[in-house]
Length: 338
Image 1: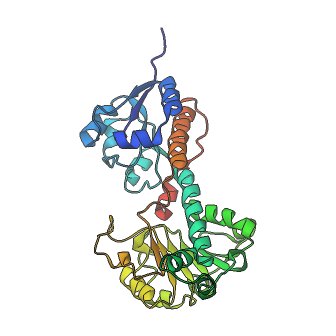
Image 2: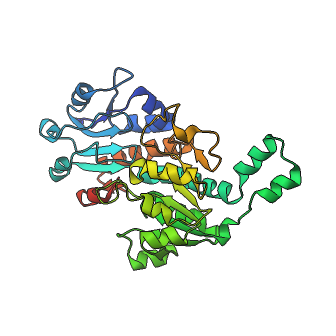
Image 3: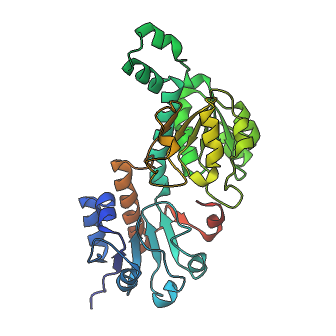
């Protein structure tokens, strides 16, 4: 008697499926077992419940409805949630971890895209590329424009990293060839880890006062929400660059806008309290030449998306072959995750 193929539930919207799974990943998934796909372009809680019937593993992502705390009771055979995005806290209730459900995610695959974006913003700001472009476009005289815009070498600067998770560490790795002095603010970073990364572990105030570039990569937790307010922003060096590709909730947005309007600092912002950013948002004011804005785009590259999906298909394969997972999230990790 042949062994019944394991059931794998794909809990992705059509948009996310196309974004995350290339033909090779789909073929690999189909080879692992009986794959159930949503019948519609969207997916709701009822679809999730139906698709999970008898499933050993499921593939989730952006747009997947949060799991019901009682999901494990209705689907006791479900062994793994493979999440093709990063944030787990709002998707899988902690109770399900306690009941034996295993969870893995693709946060490490997103990190490379965000890190590259951060370093690009730092390079653009240090070399004044946006300002050079704007002045020349407005008819500025060649040598006058060059003289008016300070040029700074990133490798000669101090970079502060707030949060040494997946993205923070990816940024640190990209900065190594530049030779920057790197300060890291993270209460969970041990001295040995800091030494291995080649960074200096320090407190938030010291990082703000000593850095030419400060980049936020902390998760939103009770202790980090609005951790950057008017007092902290006042500590920044004049002419320094403030980058936020993490979460807007880390910063007092009104205080940040006031600091930007003062002209004392530069900023590169990829996240905002209100997204999509309203058309009348003051951050869209073209007069604010010292801020660059982007539509929560730092983590979105085609290569990263397919890597996220592939990583989770690989994890499902490991589970079914009873091999160790490579990107597993434990219940102990939840308290300090985004």
